[in-house]
Image 1: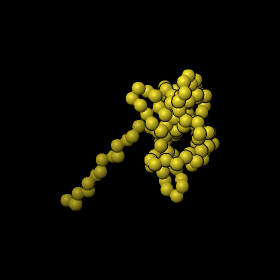
Image 2: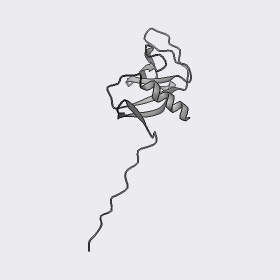
Image 3: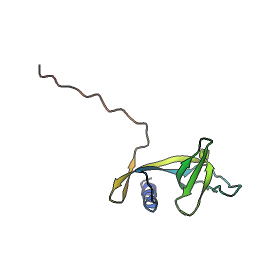
Image 4: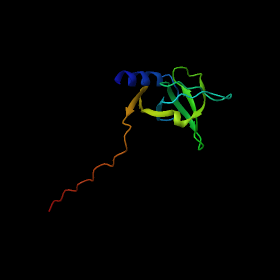
Length: 111
């Protein structure tokens, strides 16, 4: 798994993004493009999503070939690794679990 994370991070370095965070998706269901503008997906492909439509079609870029871009159904993808810009040309992995609220602050009493 660590090797896959390193691979995902190294591939993402090749992508120029305007956002400070992004999610890498793994294809879990193959998708065959049927019209121009769709992207054929093979199980195991690593994907970046650049646009999401409300009807479930996402604009995807295949990380192994950044020239390969097109629309695919969101049901074919599963979030693989969330990355956040760490500066100095580095992306840092962020846990994918639910966000946890910080513990309440305890106020010390001087009395």
